Structure formats: structure tokens, C-alpha cells
Length: 111
Length: 113
Image (cartoon, rainbow over all chains, first blue to last red; front, side):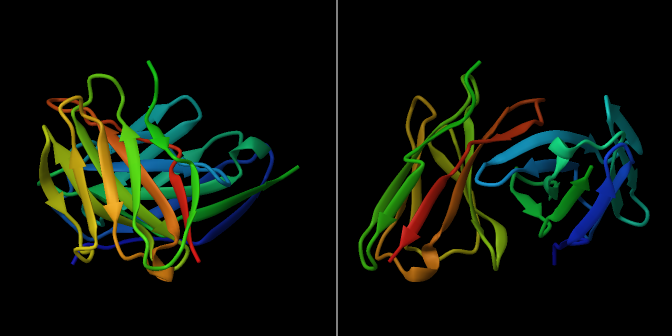
């Protein structure tokens, strides 16, 4: 069945790059999303990538997609303390708009 | 443009009661979906509505229901509340047609005691 997996925790120093990884199982996924959740808040859409692309860049964010290995990554350049949050990867199946989420990666940025 | 608005933000209910949560999508978005977030199960899809019709449903018991109105606003209802229904309920607003962005509201925190 559909499943999305992420590592649970990542710790980096301010100014370094962060790379959050995600694997998914549904080869029919059309879009893959990254969301950020801060304590007590909802989900903030960071970026998304269409399944026929292999890279997307948006300011400090770079998404890499390896469709063959069903592997997605989010790179945050020049990570700041304000980037500390939980990051969720989600896949959207070909039919419909339901998202399947990973368990989230907690990013901790130290100064 | 206003974002996705969910009300109420926080509520406490007693086991056995029922609850109704409301969601107003982004203006022009006609598709709304609901998710439940708990520490144990993570984010799980409840259902999706488009043009007042339920288009997709997740694996939740019949106590969870929803509806959408002609102005695209949506409500979800949980009847006969159980302690395990305590969660953050998130509403998502979708562009339809060629749009692929899916935006979430701040959520409604439900505590069942």
C-alpha cells in the first residue's frame, strides 16, 4: 500500500545546509509536497514538485526527486533558527487530491 | 487573499458528545479536504468535498462525517466522541483545474475528556 517514510530528527548548526529525506511507495504519485509545521500551528506549504521533474529550486529551498528510487529530498540552504520546525513530506496519488503524509522530520537548528 | 479559516480553534468536549468544526477555504477554491493529526497516527486523510459532493473518503468510522455548502465552506462532524478523537483537525483548500497547490488552515484543536 501507500507509505511515506522520513527520518524523525535532524540537528544542524545555524548557517549550515539541512537535507531532509523522504521515500514513498506509490509509483503513480503525481505530485510530492513539503510542508512545515511550527508548534501549535497548521501546515505551511513550502513547495511541491511534479513527478516528471527531477529538481525544483525556490529561494533557499531545493527539492530533488529520484523517481526511479522513489526518493525525495528537501535542502534548506543557510539554515536559520527560524527554520526549526517539523517538516512533512506528502505524496498525492494519481486519482484525487488526498495526501499521504510521512511522520515528519523534526529539524533543530542551534546557534 | 485570506487564507484557510477554521473555527473554533480550540474546544473541549465530553465523551459521548458530538462536535462540528467549520472551514472556509481560500476564495475561489472549490475543493476542501479534512485531515486528523494525532501524535500516534500522524496526519490521516478524512474526506474531500468538491462542489458539495464527497469525492473521496479515508478509513474512518461513520461517526466522522462532513458536508460542503454552495459557497464552498465545509463542516465536519464527529458524533459520539471518544477519548481517541482528541486531535488537531486540519482543513485543506485546493485549487481545482490546473492548480496543484494545497493550503492548510491553522486547525481546530479538539480535546475529549
